[in-house]
Length: 374
Ligand SMILES: NC(=O)c1ccc[n+]([C@@H]2O[C@H](COP(=O)([O-])OP(=O)(O)OC[C@H]3O[C@@H](n4cnc5c(N)ncnc54)[C@H](O)[C@@H]3O)[C@@H](O)[C@H]2O)c1
Image (cartoon, rainbow, N blue to C red; front, side, top):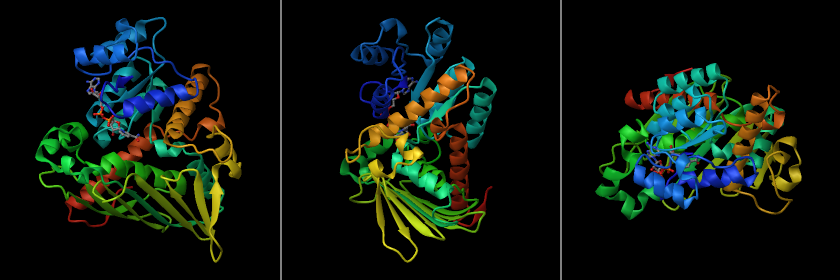
């Protein structure tokens, strides 16, 4: 693991996810770029001090040279480090599991995708919501034509954590990396959660917008980057859509919601109730589909406990780790990747996300006009 030291958020979630299905063992890490903090964090996890590094480049080099060196690395650092770190590990011949957004520019992301292909390594991108069984079921239903041709895609990702008084302070804006273009990249809310909304919409609907009309906005005083995004979408098949994401949506905890409307029926998924999916046929009544009962291959292969027992965020994260492990085993053994492990978001999804974000920023810059980008 690189990043995820004491006090960090997502690293601990990755560690749980990696252990949940007994596919991984954490044996080496660069938990912080600061030597003292890296060592203290490694001691807290009872890691072998000889395999705790303060410098990720040294870690890639030394681990690649060891007979028992790491097979894969999890990159859980602020955004600006994803591309240089992934590059170092791919060049050392190590598979990569990286958090989103893939990089801080489209050029960086494209270079990373080309390198992963050249090195023939697995590159998992942890758009975690793609790990939910009911999201996979929805994706399979759309792909099988069960809702007809997709006509409308409506996705929203609403949070309110930035609206907390402490997070509105000048000090927070000055010190927090989410508001620092050098470390977060050229956008705030768009990359933090808009990137998830974009990925989820494409993952389930099976279509990608080719035109956007976008506005980025900051409600927070003194904030350099956006804390709110609204985008209208046009798709090559004539479908229309809307994406909005906000970290200033009062009262919303983690409100990621997707609705996909086809010519025969619509689907509705709410991340805060991930064990269910609503299907409403044209002219018919809404049906509540549940994780334990749908029994599709897509849902069954992404589930762990019996019908009626809730699963959630940690299992969704673990699913991506399980998919990545299956891909790594298959690739290293020269075998075909099993169908059940192919739904994992990868480096190409990251590039598509960066292309979308670039278009959103450009449309905003040009006074929120329609922009064709694909
Ligand atoms: N997939 C998701 O649902 C999800 C959720 C939250 C965050 N994220 C992403 O995860 C990443 C990390 O976010 P976070 O909230 O955990 O951030 P954080 O600030 O809580 O943690 C970042 C960690 O990276 C470490 N770090 C910084 N520079 C380093 C270096 N040079 N070498 C080694 N470690 C270094 C820090 O010490 C810290 O431990 C971000 O890219 C974010 O977008 C994804």
